[in-house]
Image (cartoon, rainbow, N blue to C red; front, side, top):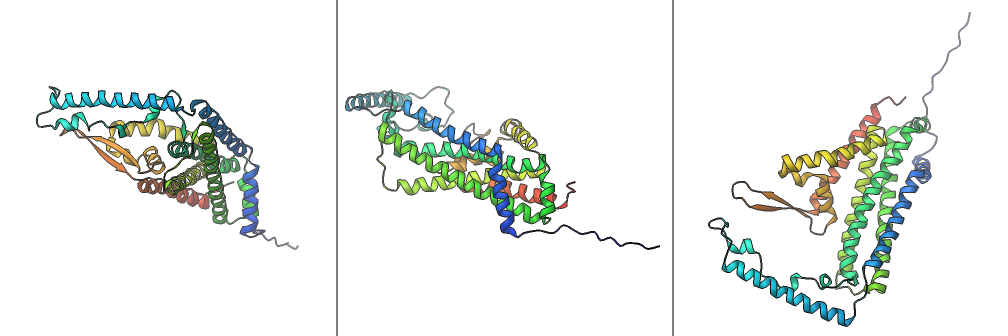
Length: 339
């Protein structure tokens, strides 16, 4: 009687990192829902440009003169109200309080915009382009969150992740390459979205307003757009890492909804001093030039104080959340049985 020895072979990688990267790029491009999300983003940008075209119009010299006159009249009315407030403070003003703090600063022409007194204001590139860049950047970040979640979520739902690990069993390499694809895609999409908005903004300025910009404008705008591209990368990676942790896109979207609707509102009501650590506040801080402001009410003085949440603070908080999710999901991916 004879026995035949059998040998169990462990799957080995069939190619290097370059082969895996090319395969993942192709996999990313092949996702129908990813293509749909990107198409919706482009359609939204076109629709926004069309809406802006209807809301702005070049102003004639007569319209500008009439608007300037209305502005000056409004300043005079507000200044008279301000002077009356200082001369006769309200009776409910706390003892020892400075009437200047209650009545505010003196109204001046610089505090008002001429656009407020024109039915259809001209599109001014110097003003509207940075504002629009923030809107485009935040919407792009939301889309990239869905893209990152969908990209890896499809692998789990179709069980192609298991098949991939037979071809490339080194799990850390698989996660690293997938994470790299998410970063590259997010940078490309966010940068292209900002470039398209600059083109659309100049088209609106040339046809419906003015393209004049002050010195240093482009440097400031480039800095703003750089932060918005970073926001897109972080959002995409949070979606990617959370879905790789839950192994389900729906679970990621449900957790995001629960956090935004329940957790953040509960924190604002029960622990308002924690607001500077909320994700939405840090998204606002990273997106805005100069950061965001949190207003905290002081029970002892009965007054509110301002707490500045800087852009750096926003980047660090969002980056920290991204890093924690990535490390945790990678650790579990390395240890869990996927079959």
